Amino acid sequence: MSKFLNDNLKSLEAYTPGEQPRDKKYIKLNTNESPYPPSQAVIDAVNSQEVSDLRLYSDPLCKTLKEKLAARYDVNYENVFVSNGSDESLNFYFMAFCSKENPVVFPEISYGFYKVFADLYSISYTAIPLKPDFSIDVSDYIGIGKNIVIANPNAPTGIALPLSDIERIVASNPDNIVLIDEAYVDFGGESAVSLTKKYDNLLVVQTFSKSRSLAGARLGYAIGNAEIIADLEKIKYSTNPYNINRLTLVAGAAAIDSDDYFMENCHRIMETREFTVNELTKLGFTCIPSCTNFIFAKSDDISGNDLYLKLKDKGVLVRHFSSPAICEYNRITIGTQEEMETFIEKVKECLK
Ligand SMILES: Cc1ncc(COP(=O)(O)O)c(C=O)c1O
Image (tube, rainbow, N blue to C red; front, side, top):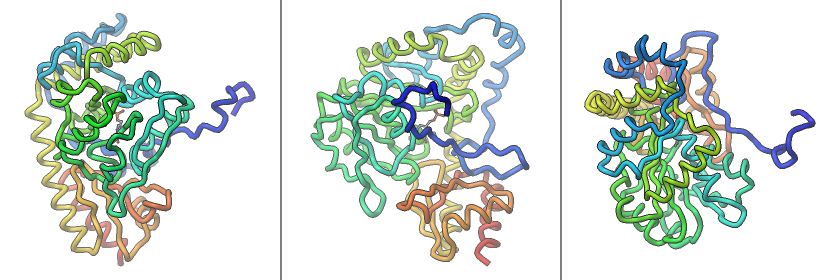
C-alpha cells in the first residue's frame, strides 16, 4: 500500500476472484464459467472487420444490444441498462442508491462482492444470517425498510427462492430498491423480470458470463423502472460512457440471436448437474439442492480444504472458501459430462 492511498480505503479488503492459473491445464470447475463455447453466430460476429473498427469508439447507447435485450425480456428499451459484466451494474447500484444514510442489507453468505462495494463506498450495511440449512429466511426482509440485495439463486449455496417470495419482499419495501442478482437464473431459477412492470422499486441484474458463455467478454445488464435505469445511465456517463467495447457489443447481440443454442446448453448443464449430485451422494457427500451451474457439497470423510488441495494436485480446480461457516464445503462448477466423470474419479481417489 502506498502512503498516498486515501485514508478511507486503507482498510478496504478487495474481492478475491477465483484462481485463473497458468501453471498447467486444469479441469476448471472454480469460477462458474460455461464449459461450452459461445455459439457460431457469436464467433462469426467478432470478425476482422469488427477488429479493424476498434479504432473507433463503441456506441455509448449500446442501442442494438439494448433493443435485442428489450425484445428478449419483453420490456421497453428504457428499462434496460447494459454494463461491463454484471459486476458493474452491482457497483453502480451501490454507488447510486446506497450510502451511510441509505443502508443496504444482504444475506451473510452470498456473493462476496456485495460487502466489498458496501465497504468501498462507506455504506451502512447488515449481513443477515441464513437459516441453518443455508436458505434465506424471507421474513427477515419483509418490511425491513432498507435497500436489499439478494442473489437468486444464491451463491455459493445454489438455493433459489420462489418468485412469490421475491414479490413479497419487493412489495413490502416500496420506499427502497430491491436488487435481485440473477446471475444463475437460467439454470433452473424463476426470474423476477416480469415483476419490474408491476413494481418501480425492483432492479433485476443478469449476466452473459454464465449461461451465455461470455465471461471473458464482460457483459451484464439490469432491467427495471425507467427512472432507476436513467440513474444508472447517469453514473455510467459520469465514469465511462464507452463501458462496453465494440467486440463485446457485437458478441452480445449475436448471443441474443442464438438464444436457443445457449438455453440448450443450460439444459445440458442441468442434466450433468443431476448426474454429479447423484454420484457425489453415492460417495457420501451432502449436496445443497442447486438451481445453478454449480454444486455446494461437503463430505464427512475429508475436510473441505483437504479435498480442494488434493483435487488441485490431481489437476481439478474447485472453489474453496475459508470462512468458518462454509469451510467444510466446496463449490463445484458443472463442466461437460466428460469433465464431471473425471471429477468423480478424482474425488474417489481423494477419498481413498
Ligand atoms: C451471484 C453473482 N453475481 C454476479 C457475478 C458477476 O458476474 P459478471 O460480472 O461476470 O457478470 C457473479 C460472478 O461469479 C456471481 O456469482
